[in-house]
Length: 283
Image 1 (cartoon, rainbow, N blue to C red):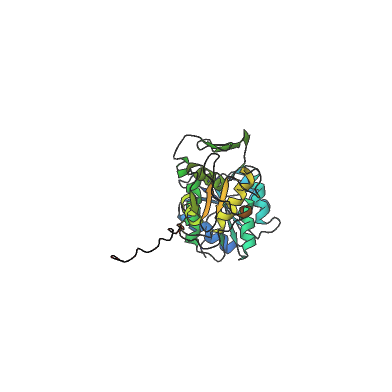
Image 2: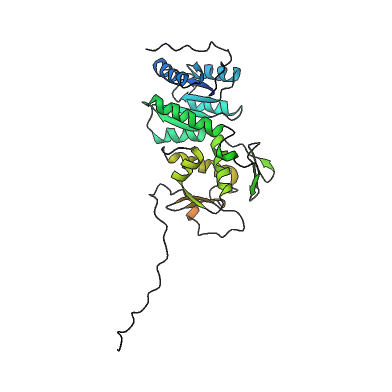
């Protein structure tokens, strides 16, 4: 087994060009492998073996990203993520040995930016870390324009990374902010979940339920009635569309239900009206 040097408790992260990562896992074998791969990829890494230790390390030196196991002693990953989020936004990738979709969805709804199911490829995890940190950086596509975006009472400042609705600030996670910014830049256009995953998450692969969960969470923060969304509409068989007041409205999906688990279908066109055949020449 590879011996990976760890940062002493309570010491600040060492300098690293690529970022600082806190790895939280009570399985020493898994933790050592993850720490080793992240070190070799150029990251400064700290490690904690349970929930309370993770929160202590987090408070002592704020990381750029947390790799967080779901099943932890004392405090589970859900609660650790909630408490970290209470101190401000920080990207979180959850590790889980469970294949249950409900656990993955709950992790995302708690505020995790991504999840990886054990057993996993350490190289894939490093790629996920790179992707999440890239999106969290100032150079991501979300900040490609400094001009604030607004519509339907919403105001989003890409530089300050702040959002308000009718003058009241909204607390959005990293992905929720990026998703809303992307939709505000393209009002009236329907996007499939795979397109949103590629444009907002920067992934060409992944579980599309990630997009569904973030849309649901975003609706809960920007819609007056999330059960009957008027801004972020579900386009059946396609994906989602942001409608701003004054734009032409297409028929609503009943009750705003999320039905994008249906395979995407090509756009339908109206059939041309039937035309009676011409009589034969000379008839």
